Length: 332
Image 1 (tube, rainbow, N blue to C red):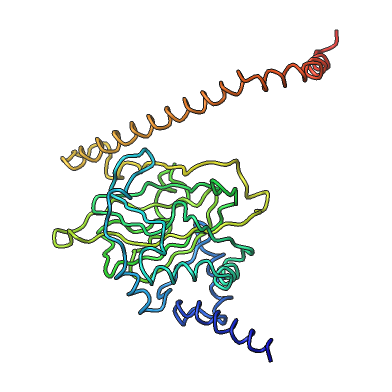
Image 2: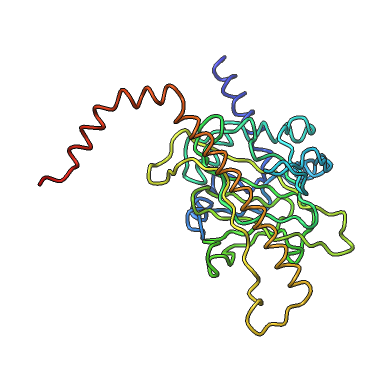
């Protein structure tokens, strides 16, 4: 009797957690969703409309935090037009329930079955994730994400983005774009474009070619108070197939290319000139960032080389290095 009571409680807990999802996401669709995920291009992904229970989604939209400039610092420490909140449980009851669902083993197992990636791990720190709000004029350059959790050293495997915008037109910009190769003209054309409409979710694998971003948000005059809102969740595993692994790196960005209309014989308009100046200025800022990062790496390496432990290590290994060098000398 006691075992039956515990089993019934477990079933009720699973039902309660997964009840936050739309009823269309159930066991009978797992095979269909998995097939769609693994066959999608330019990399494995899945777009699900009506991802959450409709009323629950409305609660998340209602509790979405107001834009706060103190939460809008970019990677260079500058205040930008994107605000991020990572402590979901403090945002309201709906976000606490969302967090409970995301971290549950039942949900992780469900996502694992859909993607074919088992043993998924939830990130309690929401590094890089949480609620994202992008204001008019904001854009996100094509990029691949950092590939290891910075404190736990887990392999980053999946991104889940749930959009929370009651309306959105494609000509407003801000649509998620999935690209095959932003370094080339053909590859920079999006293979998939996803409008960020409420209760639409995008689930995609993160690897060394999962390039994604969105073009500049350009809202019409009557929508000045609209913003692009979403929740981003990242999933990890302790291990990953060796052929898919790469040395640890941060998020890698590629600035968008000039519009294809900039051709020989084209008469530049003022907006073309402004666009060219903007792109050049952003490249200059990015080059300065890379320069400062290289200096930082060089200082770290110099500190290691000059350290007593490094010098001691070289002294102790000198005989072996000398023997190896002698063996490599050609014989007369």
